[in-house]
Amino acid sequence: MAQDFLLSILIPVFNEEKNIEPLLKRLLAAIKNFRHEVTFVDDGSKDTTAKIIKEKAKGNKNIKLISFLRNFGHQQALTAGYQLVNGDCVVTLDADLQDPPEIIPQMIEKWQRGVKIIYAKRVKREVDGFFKRQTAKFFYKFINFLSDTLIPEDIGDFRLLDKEVVAFINRLPERSRFLRGLVAWGGFPAEYVEFTREKRFAGKTNYTFSKMMNFAMDGITSFSIKPLRLAIYLGFTSALVGFLGIVYAVLGKFLLPSHWVTGWTAIFVGIMFMGGIQLLTVGIIGEYIGKVYQQVQGRPGFLIKEKVNL
Image (cartoon, rainbow, N blue to C red; front, side, top):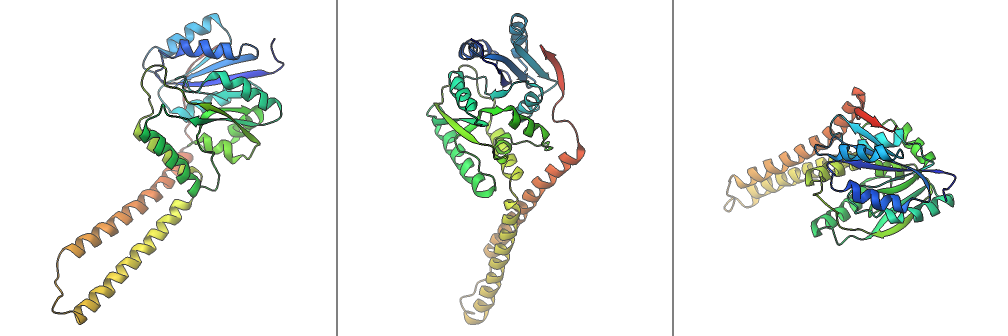
């Protein structure tokens, strides 16, 4: 029997043609007892992902589609969905079935008790490679070390948000969006539902190493100015090392004249060290200036090509 609230399922997709049908089969079975809408956001797919979703939407008005003109990224796809869904609560998950839709009723149960945010927490992720597990662990520890906002570990974008939290996120003015941080930054009551991460059903991940690095950089620079302070500390450190080198050179010249041999090694090391510090500092500053530049431009974060059942 249907419940007296509307559940919105929000799924960003990019080249997921082989996963749409199996996902819908499991998802619709899991939420059949709730009044629901399932909104896909196609992030500029080059395959038949959008076509398959439109075919499914013809026979089921609860299935909806937002198509971008081109690829704008996962976070912008979620942002667009948050702006257009209508649910009293919104569950976001990926289309690759690594996030099991069967735990959604558990998330709804906690939400009905008044919790505003329910995270799906990965307790086991052996299906991910060793490198990915270790880099993910390092990322969360590093970002929480730098950030003033604590971001829960082993949490992805599989979560349930109350409509109050969704409205709060929609009001935030940032163009460069790190939603995991924005959700945590609000300070709304949160709980967890644990699950074991499954293997990707079909296809290859679109989340390359370079995208992971860019995502990590966005997360760090969106929620902390500590990297800028780190640049100052590195400047002081390099200056101190340079000063000690001068002292060593002067003392060596006068106290050890017979053993003092001039050469290129010290010069080379000094130039490389100072050059590295300067490039790192300029790069950190450049990241923050780039975010300011994007914000001042005021361009939309995404462009919608088509809407179906919306």
